[in-house]
Length: 262
Image (tube, rainbow, N blue to C red; front, side, top):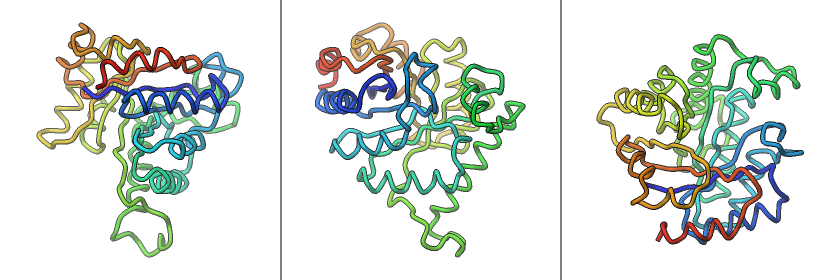
């Protein structure tokens, strides 16, 4: 199972985050992920660095580790703008981007407060948000296509389209991921974790290369193949564990995980 780490870019200063990313690369983590939020309030932070700005900075100070969004809210940016951002970051990183996307939350959820503060529309019902996610991804792929419409002449496109992984909390979105995208992600303690993974894999069929990931708190021992939680995830079909370091990067703890990543 691939082992990744996620940082909260609202948790610390740029130098501290940079050191955390460099330490993660040296320890042997496969990918470093971040958040896509306008406010740090939901994570007990005073601020929040913008998602793709910080990822670009992380990409420029590293050479091996991949960089990813877990997850970027598909409603936060016009799909044409997001397509441009992704193409640019793929170029800058040398093709190291993992694009995690999300359909957004309901208007009345705590996470929806960011969108309400900016007078952004949040679609209802949930199925409308799922449909919007698929429409936006389709638009992005049409901009990147080699046989694209002449209207997109001169628009940047990545030399290699990054894997697109969707964060899910429902069977419907899990099925959409299996049918149309490159991977699925859910939280470690979701009561329907196994069912969500099965739904995505069933929808995927026998097509290889599908990424099944779970995020959890950052516990170095979870990276140990002999740990019961590690074995449980593998049994569920998980191919990638993303451990979320909620607070400021703790370099010694990150280094401690290296023993399991060799």
